[in-house]
Length: 430
Image (tube, rainbow, N blue to C red):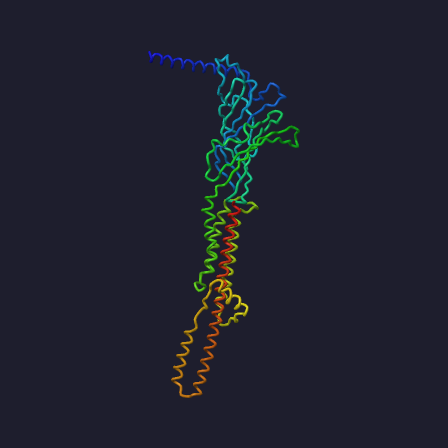
């Protein structure tokens, strides 16, 4: 008995579905008998047809900053009432909803006004949901390319606002009026983007009066609020720049005799130029310089200045015997005071070896001389040579000490500059 009842139930379902299919086919034939999808489906041609628009943002496929184009995947729902597609559901066995191809019915010609695509095709020709009271719901997916004014002043900590403006292309507000289904776009099915965070999609209705016509033209604008995820750019653009910029002050700490002070500055400058070109390739050509670009330019200027100062200090370090004596103010200010502040205690090369060699030379020469007068002349000559050599040695040591004190002074100055620039860019980011 149980199997028999189950078999009868399946047969009943099959018969029911068959009858529903027959009623649906009969309903479609009756509705389309004298129907035309070329005209607005209103009983009074002077009345406006109300269309409700609801947009669901599914995914941000790409944000092309250089070409200022936003590529998004949308689900577009349009709802309106067709005065000629109504029926009494009791005449069709209670059938109240059917799904038919959208090409069979009249559809609003809503388009994306700020479209930035060569392909002018609209949403896909999906089926529409038709209710017995004439209400039509059309859900269609669409991949849109819209123009978006991109402001990269605070890149990579920037936020963007991209508009999606929908409106009728041929009908004015007295013929087709547009209403918002919700106060904002639907983000419940949004797929997270690796580069952008979506913080909302508020919607506003605008009614524009053009100079050519006296009729109103309504449109609905959805504003996509995007915030860039900056972690990628911090670790790949900012952090290397921070580390490279800290190498510039260390060029002052490098010994002058190593011969690599200028080479270090030039190498750092070339490395920053490479990063600057990487940023410039991805940014749109505009007058607003990105925040990271300003940081690179400031750092490159600082490295150039440090390299120029290094060349100037190296000239001081390698002053020879023909150099002028160190001025008195430089001795007091740099050698006496600044050297103690920056912990520079080295005097330079020690001249004791020259003194010992001269003394030994004096003993050797004295032991070989028999004339007292000749001996005194030799002693006086050697003493004069020794005094001249010692004066030259002391003068060179003083210039080298001045160069070393200036190296330490500019090293700390540039360290402070790098630190302040880093704090400034972090503050701008917040």
